[in-house]
Amino acid sequence: MIPQFLPGRGSDLRELNQALSDLLGVPVRTREMRRGIAAIAEASSLAESPEEPEVGVHIAVRGQFTGRLLLLMRPGDARRIGSLLGEGDAPSEEVLDACREVGMIIAGHYLSAVEKFAGEMGTPTPPASGVDMMAAIVQSVVANAGEGAIASLFAIELEDPSGPMQLTLLVLRDSPIGN
Image (cartoon, rainbow, N blue to C red; front, side, top):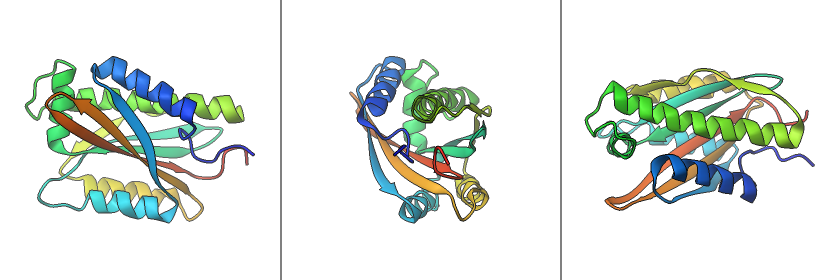
């Protein structure tokens, strides 16, 4: 049986963690938190905090399969990622560029895992990012997923010396891999 949620196998997550760790220079650990409707609901609730709106990177996948990857992070964590990549720590386009770079690494590993297990090809769109409008972006991504979408929610934990950070990755597929 071909896995429906990728990344998700231990080796795929180890490769993703290593790539992010190499980019950011800090230890990274990824774990799956939820699957199915609960994953979508939890991701939606993360974007509804008016006190601290999320920063998000949205990457659509097109090709022999379609889906979406949505990377969510608190603004403070986005600035710290920008700082790790030498982009300073002010909310700026440079910080969003750094977050998009992290999103593209995640998307690349997701697509590699799908190709490896299912022999299906996908192409990521250029990453779109936003701040302060994440509730609308999450709702749009979820609405476009359709009723048959398969969802998985991942926590990506970064062990920065100034304190831990957590990013959230929602993976939505329009259908099971290999079907």
